[in-house]
Amino acid sequence: MSTNTMIKVWDPLVRIFHWSLVLAFFTAYLTEDDFLTLHTYAGYTVLGLILFRIIWGIIGSRHARFSNFVTSPGLAWQYVKDTLQLNAKRYLGHNPAAGAMIVLLLVSLLLTTLTGIATYGAVESAGPLGNWLGNIGEHGEDLLEEFHEFFANFSIMLVAFHVIGVIVESLVHRENLVKSMLHGYKAASPDKSVK
View 1 (cartoon, rainbow, N blue to C red):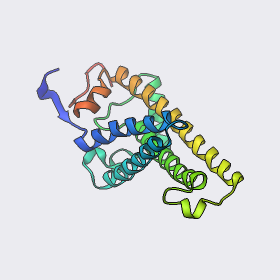
View 2: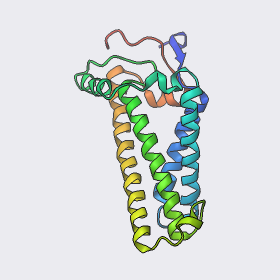
View 3: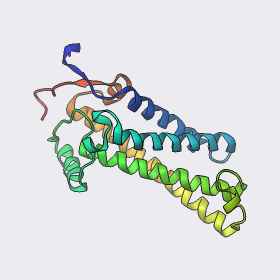
């Protein structure tokens, strides 16, 4: 495929956000019990990245804006069915299923970080909620930890589905989506043999 058939889709901020979020989330996830300071800073980084992405989803470049890719759940589900039948329409930006996954991931990661901040405040009497939640009691601490772990594990499950979706989409449309998220370019028009 020649370079003149390529078009810039993912702006640098979207790409930096994406890979920074991958690094920060997995750092937080893998340091849960053993490295509390690193876990906490990685969690704050995830929260900052999520807040940035919400803002960039409103004011950012064309393919970064939520208005470009957030659709109804029915359209997202129809896209999944079409993909499984190898008959899905190719999108230059995010497809409807990817749009739904982005929303789910942002919500799940936001809840993970907020419950993490609450847990940190309750268990360690630290962080922005330490003064309010520091005396919540053992039952409250356990409940917050359970919520935090649930959303962290739910986020991991969503990440797994996201990776599977990227692989399937790359195969169906014969394009390397991981590479696109590294350099920002995609083919301007789809392969003629693929719908």
